[in-house]
Length: 248
Image (cartoon, rainbow, N blue to C red):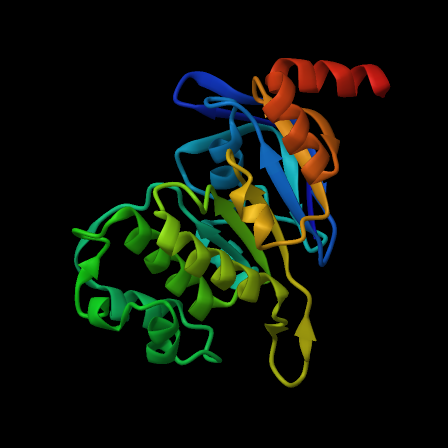
């Protein structure tokens, strides 16, 4: 569903991604590990099409279509959706209005808000004064009503307390394992995802198919998510990458 070929990206004058090759097959969930500053968030933002990330070389294909130069709104219409690690405050825009604008037409906004404990937040300005867990639930509400077929999740566990992580994890599970509703003429399709995680907590809620390790703006190795997480915890990123590259 997603294919990235030799992607080089600059933020300002600095090249952050230096030849990323990655693919996520249709219906699969891939996890992205890597130390801070390795380029993980830059990769997700570039896939989504944020304008401050300048592609200087390489291609991004989504559903067999070249989206490298496609604007962000067109990517969203195609079925890309993102959960931001640090979403912005939007003063003057109510959460309900944003959710309604993003709604695919198949989801009841109020019911989705009830499931996330956000009914009392619908008339509040987007993210203003929200706690870490509330920010994540706000992002999940927007994803729920958009109902994308490909989810880009940037550290869904970060800033979430122990009580909220179960709600967030279960909602992400439901989002990923429900079919994307594409209308009567198209039926439904399987969803895919690329998920950034540091702690690996999200793996308790999703059955990830593969994992990549990023460092220095490049994909260094890949493997089974639980195996890579264990190696990172026991050996650190450097030894994990070194051992897996030797095996290759």
